[in-house]
Length: 236
Image (cartoon, rainbow, N blue to C red; front, side, top):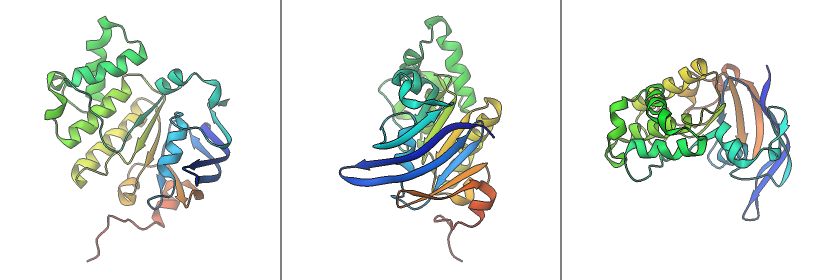
């Protein structure tokens, strides 16, 4: 199992407070890794390091065997796309939203319509929605547009920060099924921060458990997730 990312002795601080410490883990290539653990454990902080929204205060991060600091930030973010917890919609139509990412990726104008339709279908959205104002979409559709926008750069890696937290369980499961199929069809490396443990059991291959800024367990998702409580589970 080859590594997409290697983190060696990584630490991070924010506003004078340590948020990650002594992180020594790998994120395997072409698999889905879930980051689990209690709120405030460091899941989002770790994801933000992987496309250099933040840089660590200590330690090293390697992407495809090369120190991440050696990549130009723009090039890195073309290859490592981050989808945020709350869908971010720019003004204008869905097509206008995808055009933002197309410009970053250098997609030629003559290929835009074709590629926009392709990523909409990959995100399981009808291309007819491209003409729809973004503000008219449902929460689930907005999150799928954010996924489609990330795919416009043809990334090698998708980072997803609690992508289903604002969605109802049915919509959440459907979105994660879509993301699981992307892992297979596009051979993407995917890292997902999530608190929905029972849902993660359906799609994850690898898991990291973060608590108080440390990775307390990592490895096969079936072993790790079977032993974790599900905060969304309700008692009879």
